[in-house]
Length: 224
Image (cartoon, rainbow, N blue to C red; front, side):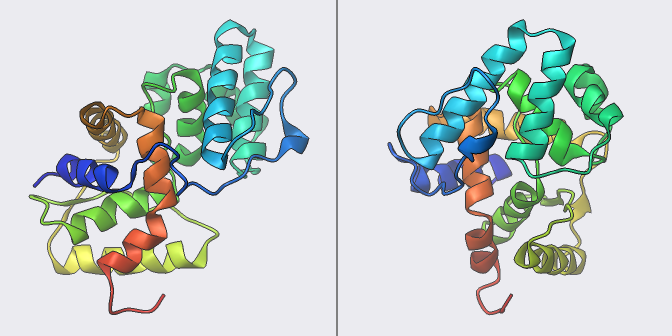
């Protein structure tokens, strides 16, 4: 089994018409001007917001592109420690230049890329990283690799990161290459989404939402 196979199986077990496993609400107090939240579930509203922001970005000037990027990283994503220089870079640099950063700032710059090209680039953050690694423990994945584990304010994610690293070292896993892992992840999730007939961002949202469940499934006998 490959990691792609494991993700496809996970998607088949969880993707539905409603996708009610996604519970993170959009705060309407900070919506950028010109965006409107539809009626519906958190999944529906988050997807609608992403697609509206992508449409806005595609025709915006550099200043507005930075505002959109700042909103999605800081207000929507909760990452508030980026400098204005970083925001400008994330908003305006080419995808190639951002991807070359590797894991540095990836939870921010991958959000920026997902707004520009929501059907081509997926967000990579601490929960997604946790899920990718847990899926390789749960399933008999051939040649598993450690995808970079990111810092998180969530104590369960932090504890899970430590346990995954211990497991991977004990079982001789290789580590994903710093300059290549995002492309590898993005390629896998894109291919899996095609096989599932789903959107790229839907599958990424599923990995995000199910991270803690997958952690407990990977280590059922441990308390976190």
